Length: 172
Length: 277
Image (cartoon, rainbow over all chains, first blue to last red):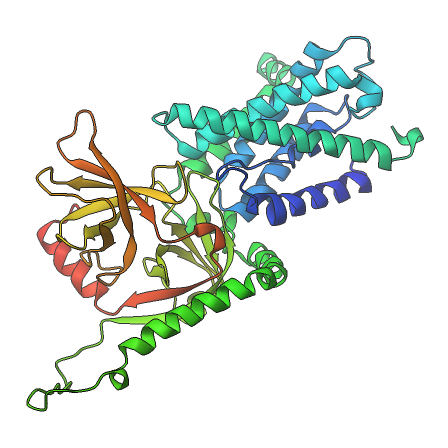
């Protein structure tokens, strides 16, 4: 399961997130989270414990570099916990027990987009509320969740496209 | 007992999630213990070095602006030098001797990591314990207050930015001298709010807001920004004014760390009277 491709992807996504995207401030407060691609792209039939450990490691790595205590860890774990259920929810024609990674080829464009949107929204909702730790600025927080999700989704989709183009078809 | 194990192994996914999730929430909840949670902060060694490496590349792009800021500041300081003045009255002279006692010392540091997008933003500086930095020192730039040091490692230090929900800065209106407290409310990173201004004060748009010097962290009269509008919020009896900050946190690249040599003395004395502050 721990293939070198996943390790490289892990390191690459952490670096992109903390050195580039964390410094970007679209509209003053929108902060895209592209590292979620790592959780989204894990094989469909990955064992639950491994999924959670990956999520924990990824969240911790991002937290360590962005001075955010453990809020990325908590929200990435939550997202990983919801992942199997969401896969069941959006699965239509594709084979969800195969070892394939989610991609346009294996899931189809609409299912992939839906799956990513729901998980990104769940992640961002927890992330931004944990960041504030109280509900007094709810309207502002909701707009942060919404707009950051849109940008994260765009970045994640670009990531899916790049990975699909870059990897040879027999590995999918 | 066997049933229990069966139960746990059937729902292990949920229990493992719960365990890790609670761990993360505990770490997040311990936000007061910055030193203990240092492992999770960018003042730690690996993260600090990564940010420093990134800064080495990125800082070249802002050299011109930094250069201009430094020139501006030097010009301002030159204008204050004794040599720039002509003594026109020979019956008056100033004799500085032991009546001046040093209260603040300054040290410069590079900003290697900084955020403005979150509700609670932090600044990482490339000076630490080995350079004499301690928690609760202030960070200044030519444009005003940037933040307060909260944690230090050997070579790096981490500061809560002024753009942090737990930072409250004691400020005053320069013309009238009325005191209030400045806090960032999470909206635009160029504006903050000054609260507790008595309603009888005659506020003007453009009134300058400076540090009050009441807290032991920052010197007095450091320009922060100016008032753009004000209101009495529902349920309150004081004015809350919107302050346009002088500082653009998005372009922060270097800063001064200010150390108050009398900070301990002042705080110890104040604790004698009100131990619960």
